[in-house]
Amino acid sequence: MKPSNTNFLFSDMSEEARSRTFSKPDAVRRLLARAADEGLSLDIQIEAFTLKFHSRFSTQTDLSKQHLVLEALFPSYGNELLSSNRFISVSFDTGNFMVSFRTPFDKGWKEDDSWLWKIAFPDSAALRPLRKYFRVEPAAGDPVRIYFELDDDLVLGNVVDISVGGLLFVSKVRAPILEAGKEIAGVHLKLPGRSIQVDAKVVRITSVNCAVVLTSISDDDRRALQDYTENRVAEIRRGFAV
Image (tube, rainbow, N blue to C red):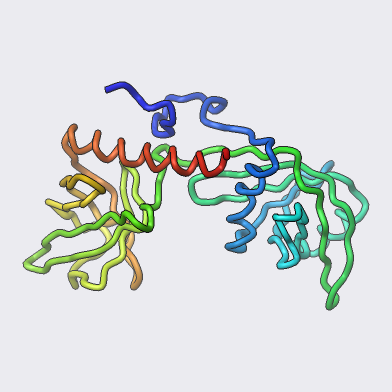
């Protein structure tokens, strides 16, 4: 089988090959959208200092107008350092990617005794994969289902995210003995257009979801799962690059 050109799954790819830099404003805006919409934590490094500070995009941020505003930096003395410096580097973790950019700040002001910082819309932003196996969320209109039997209990659920190495799922019906370290044989995954079977081991469980690592999978089923994740990667990257 010829590998896909969009493959992010091979661990022997160089860092340069795995990373991309986006310079079109629309693409940069898409990279920043998740951090702005979900309130992701931003790591801030002020030029000439090695210390890292933390912030978030303020609700005053308007990506459609290329208007970026940061909340006050934490620890708070970072705000004093920033006020006398020009450039900052910003990075944030989306779960699969590290996004980073460097830009000057425009101005700072106080509202309700807290600093807000307006920064320039970056000319470019870098996107670097964080995982050996790229983890993807199933498309909303094409869910991935999971079901298996465990000690006479039938567990049914929906996959939240999945890679060729493991997955996270939610279920309204869960076996009482499902716990970290539990081995599960014969896990059925219904991918769009095909069902596959794997063995798995529970690595984390909460009242909301369950994370498992795949311990056994046939070559054919592994290729099917890899094809699925690669296709989802291509969809995600097209969304960034348009």
